[in-house]
Length: 216
Image 1 (cartoon, one colour):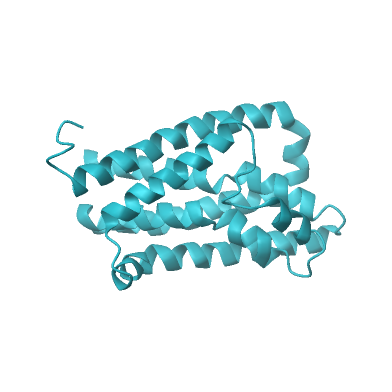
Image 2 (image 1 turned 90 degrees about the vertical axis):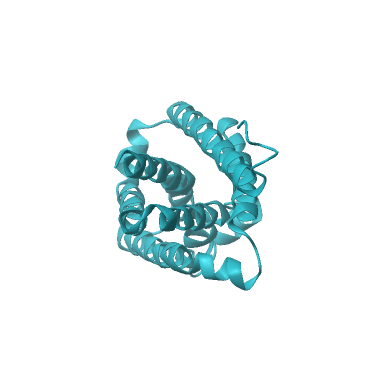
C-alpha cells in the first residue's frame, strides 16, 4: 500500500508539472486574445478534449508502440528522463519549453483557424514530455498492479480538467498572478520536475545495468 501511495503521488506531481496548466493558460490567453468569450471557451474545451484523447491513447498503447519499434522501457525511461530534465531546466530559467511549443508554432497559431488542435492540444498540452511521462508511468504501473494502472487512467482526466478550468477562468487567474508570481511558481515546479527526471534516469540505468549501478 505504501508503494502504491508513493507511486500515485509521484504520478500526480509528474503529470501535473509536465502538463503545466499555468503555462498552458498563459499561451492560451495570448492565442485567443482577439476572440469573443464563446469562441475562447470553445477553443479551451476542444484543446483539452483532444489532448486528453492523445494522452490516454499513449498511456494505453505506449507499451505496445515501444515493443513494435524494439525499444526497451529502460532505454525509453532514460531518454524520457533526459527530455524532462531539459523541460525542467527551461522552467527554472522561466522559458517556454521548445519541446512543448516553438516560437514559430506559437506565432503561426495566432492566425490559425483551428488553434485548439495545433498548437494548444499538441504540442502545448500533450507534448513529448507529457507523452513520455504517461508511457513510463503506465509501464511502471503494470508491475505494481491494477490499482496503479487505474490511478494513471484516472489522473490523466483530472489533470486535464484542472487545465481546462484554468483556461476557462484565465481572466480571473491572470488578475491575481502576475509575471513575477508565474516565474516563482514555474521555477519551483521546474526544480521538482528536474528531480523527477533524474529519478527516471537512475531507475532506467539501474534496471538496464544492475551490476554497474548497483550502488545507486
